[in-house]
Each structure stands twice: as structure tokens, then as C-alpha cells.
Length: 254
Image 1 (cartoon, helix red, strand yellow):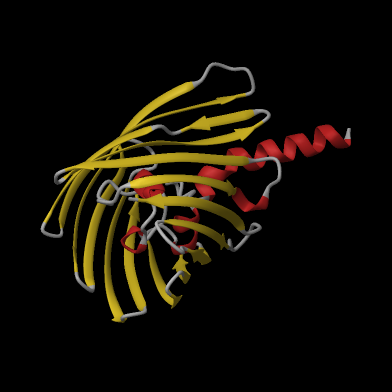
Image 2: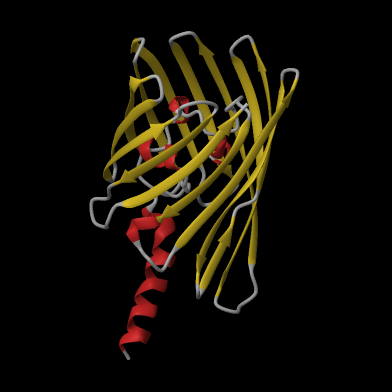
């Protein structure tokens, strides 16, 4: 009876994850640390939440939502470029013994003189226990400007889905070692919210990340070690009602 109860509670947590995680899944260690402020990100894993990253590389990530040992999220992402055009492909896979969810995507974006324009298509599908999987298609559109110490970004994520989201973000460098960003998010079925983030470079290959959002009240913290083109990052993100979410990523940039 105890086993059945634990299994039921774990499955219930999985079903509740989507509305509690601000509707658009932010699984990478970087997104977990900076609460989805992709202007601060250098991880190709975040092509899943931004169509205008304009970077190349390979990323593998592990995420434990709300510290549940019954739920595992794995991600694999890759991005290449040719001239001013970037192509990215990847997927996030959530697994529970009674539930699974996939989010494969394909992105194309154009980057020229600091201006980026991009689009991403998502073909998501999930299944509870042995029932047939349900499929859904959505897309992302975005535009960004990054030049020197300043940047701005506007994104439409998961259009034509219940998780549709529009966000506006800006960033500025306070010093050579400190960069900040702030954004406003409007969601289709949830409350709008503000978010802020900061990166502090403690050393040539060690950086600290921090962030906060107001709805629900959550904090993100992370540390990244990047001695060369590869980097290892760990992050944690709190929740006002549930246990913190943990994530770890291995990134290689080229």
C-alpha cells in the first residue's frame, strides 16, 4: 500500500509540473539559474526557449523538477552555423514510470551586425502510462539585438498552444565582470511577472549567476566552471510552495 501511495503521489507531481513551472519548461542549468533570461545565456540548450541565441555548440543537461527523485529530465542540444545563418536541433525528455514527455525542436536564425531574427518549431508529445501519446505543434518567434555591453530581446514562445508566452528583456554590463538583465513576461493562461538576473565573473573560468521573479516568488542560483570552450554548470531554483529544482549541464561551444 505504501508503494502504491508513493507512486500515485509522484505521478500527481508530474501532472502538476507544467502549470507550476510557469508553463514554458526551462530545463537547462543556465535557464534554471537565470529564470529564463536568455540574454544572459551562452548555452545552446536554451535554443529550446529562445529562437535567437546565435551561438553554436553542443549541450547535455539533467534536471530534477522540484527535487523529485521519481522524475528525470534529460536534454541534448546541438547548433551549427554557416555564414550568418544558425541551425539548432535538440530535445528535452521527461521520464516517470507512468508518464513521459518529449519536446523535439528545430530552429533557424539569422544574425547580422548584432541583430538576430529566428524561428523554432516544436513537435511535443506526451503519454500517461500505456495510453496513446498526444501530439501538439507550436512555434517560437524572436528578435534580439546584442552589441557590446547592451542588448534587448523580444520572444513569442509556444504560439498556438496553451503555454503561449510573450517576453521582453534588456541587459546591460555594470562593469567588465558584472552583467545584469531584466524582463517582463506575459502568459496566456497565467499571471504576468517580472524577472531580473545577474552574472558575476569571479575568475577567468568561474562565474556566479543569480535571479528572481515575482510570480510565483522564486530565486535562481548557479555556478559555472568554464576553463576553455567547454563548461560545467550547476544551478538551483526555489519555489514558493515546492522543493527547489536542481539542474546540471555540460556545454561545449565552438
